[in-house]
Length: 425
Image (cartoon, rainbow, N blue to C red; front, side, top):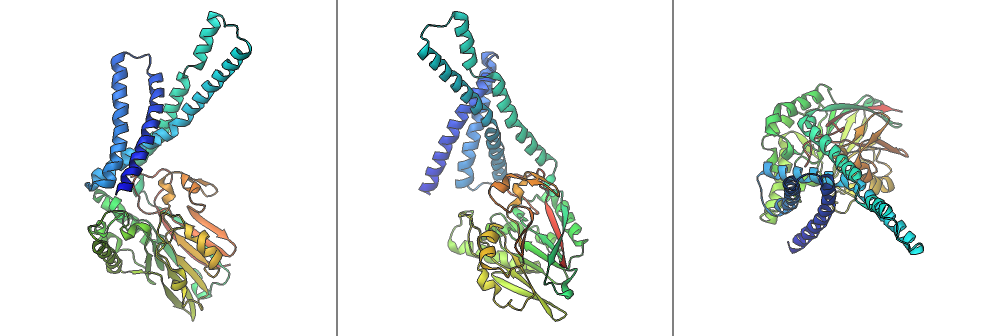
């Protein structure tokens, strides 16, 4: 607990220093206004600065009503993004002023004669904070703020899109040619609004109209605790497939991100989560596999618990254990929540895994996505963050998620339902 307080105090001090720096630009922009207006602007600025810092402590150390916690998190995220995008223009301005000051010092060093009064005034004006660049910085910071705001009011988090992907395997048995697989990922039930139950259910109906033979769910059913699923079981239990629905756990499903009254309470929560999967008719694969058998041929569905290459994410997955008994399967499909698992362990150690299905990244709920081009800040954290990837004879597909976390919007990264069709080739 003491370490958490210390970390938050250090973060808060850094944020205050950043806010002080940003406030210099605000003062430059409004310097021509009357004293009363400038004081009001200063009060508003520092009020929101205090809100961000207070939100950090409240979310971490105080049990808050869910809607209040989400509101505080959202406010903090938006304000931090505003500052992040505004700062570069201000830094450029100060580098410019520093360069002009340095040149002035050099001139004075080698030409000690004082400049004429008019020239001195011109130099002083040049090195004062640029009102233009200050305005530019604040304007640039406002663009993502407005964009993310639109992502909230547009209800983009419930605008489900179907992505169709053909997966080719050279050794696919004829019995499995044309097999249709649906994938959902990252439902995050705790983020979904009860007022939008109809929209969430419509997404499942959209999936079912695709008539998949098999369905995969690749983790993060909840945000923090199983109780979040209380009002959603009757929606997601409608996800059915003739050959079965198979699921795995994601990093959020273990309850690692909240305080529990005891280790027993945390364990009980996880056992409840496993029962929810079973009650919905989903086959939860906990480092296990299932063999689909058709026409005397076998296709292996392997599921592992969360395994993340980034240090803060748990590594509960045991792929070696899960794949035992799949030796005779012509094709092996792996469900693993975190796509970093693919490059860190699957590629170097398990060349017999033909395709991996993941989620986790959400595409950071922000970016652009076209057939021939996609971009998101997620790519600076995850080399594989959305869509289909191939390396050697192995493939990975990353679904950007059905739900959302933290920021209740999506900009350019619509919630995804993926339909795969298997082909020999």
